[in-house]
Amino acid sequence: MLRSILSAFNARPFGLMIPPAWLAAVGVALLWLLDPGVCLLAAGGLLAILVVVSWGPSAPAAAAAPSASQQALVESLDDDDELRYHAHDRRCTAVSEHLRRFGSRVDMRILGERIAQLQQTYLQLLLARQAMKRHTAPAPDDGAETPEAKLARLQAQLQGETPIPDDVRASITAQVRTLQDRIRLRAESRERLPLIEAELARLQEQTELLREQAATATEPAVMIDAIDRVFQSLGDTNRVIQGGRA
Image (tube, rainbow, N blue to C red; front, side, top):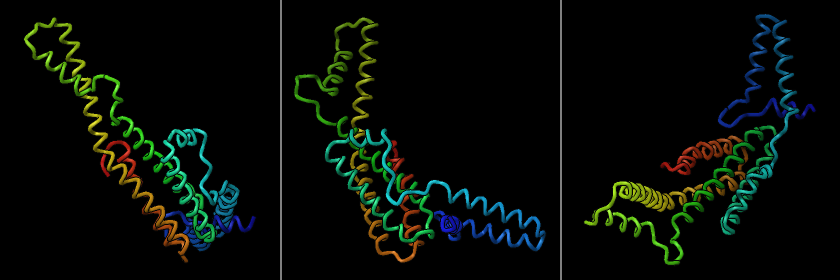
């Protein structure tokens, strides 16, 4: 119990140089100069908070097991991409395992959340890439008209000399707009694929670097800063997934 409270007292969230509980303890000590009674109450409150935190669920050393919904997404990947995801998952788990040796000097709860976010972002990239590849894949040669060919035929029909009733012309015009949207979306997907591939490679390399750093680091601050930088870069990656640019 005492060890858990000490761990909560020394926990330092990512990005902070000093554990928040240390600052609170200094504030409590300064209160003694103003009002010893209030100081004792504040000290009791701080201790109660630390006890509650120490009883809370601690982040696992390894990444948490995926939920049923996330596991279903993983299983929906192509075989090669599923293997690629599990390789990335093992890298993330190795980072957490190496950081266990720092004990209370790192906040494993926040670490667990950030590692989980890294895994989720990687999975979303794989799913986005798979959807784009399927969307832009050539249609099977079954004699069906391609969107481009159909668009050209309909446009020629609209521009031809043969009279077309107004209601038929309106329907054909709507088809043309729909086909133009389909072709545009396919072109955008083809343009985004190299960016998705680059982001996947970047996350793989960054996670591998984290694993190597965690295996050799002697001070937790080095790893806290490194994980902070990777975590902050995920905002750019999420914009890529949603169709923007990093």
